[in-house]
Image (tube, rainbow, N blue to C red; front, side):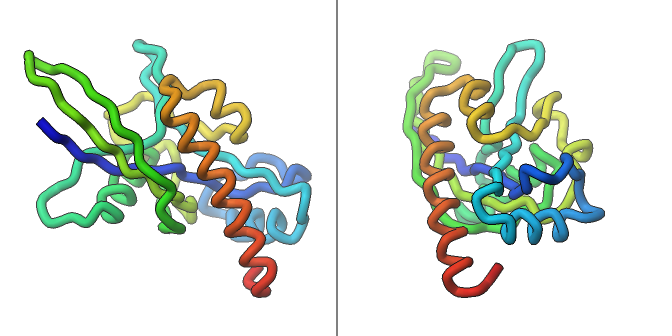
Length: 172
């Protein structure tokens, strides 16, 4: 049986000179400072986890009737992290198989790059009991599934190109 879901890499930009600032009070200022600071900018990503199982993952979930894959990714990211997100672009997909109740599923998960633009991680749903920001290099060490580590590396490359484009176009 085939199954589909969508999710993404939710990021925020932070200046290495800035303290960790929570949403929503001054994220716009922190983001602007990070963009203007050039090489001292760092990307942080949010991971969701289950403490009892020791699992850390990227937010993702199953479509509801009538949703586009982009809508699924944004909704699931918002529900599971408590953050408001803006779609930047498509990263890629991963496929894997699993068996549940003697039925083999072939699942494809489409991942998108999503910028956190507000919200609060304390407002996440109850599917996961942990929601935490990590610098990207640290998030790679925490992720449970190697295919998600690969998506995270792709997201980092995509974000670097996106930032470069924005700087070239004077959008920062």
